[in-house]
Amino acid sequence: MKKLLILVLIFVLGLNVAAKNVKPAGLSDAELNNMNNTVDCITKKMYAGAFLSPENTSTLIGIKIKLDDSMLISPDSRYAVIYYKLGKIYQKRGKTNEAIECYQAIIENFSGTALAPKAAYALKQMGINVVLQQKIDNNTDEEE
Image (cartoon, rainbow, N blue to C red):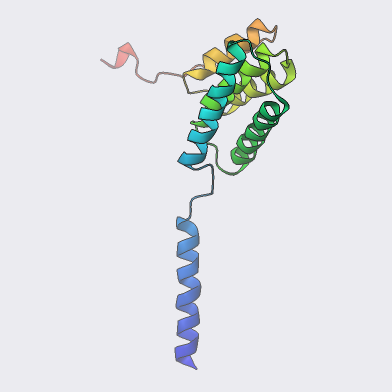
């Protein structure tokens, strides 16, 4: 009986340790690369003056939904690039609300990336006032 109890205890402790080491599932590198390439292809098509098909529109919506869902599980700064590209596409297509959502996602979640000022600028061009949080430098000249 003691052996069974010890085995169960070891099993439960093992599961607990394994659960702590599991990273929340976000988008894989392959999924991110696929999304990025798809958005790039649609961007090229749009800038070439071609109309976007309903399938292209559906694909863009699907990518945005996957990004939004992944943000709830495991925010990753690599998502900022795709959000920015989606924002540009939506902005160029006159889908202002969708573009705003993409740019705001960058500012709210990835303010430390190089895309945050670009997203803020895009929002300002659309008439939306944005204030980016400034990083505070704790190293002052007085410490020298």
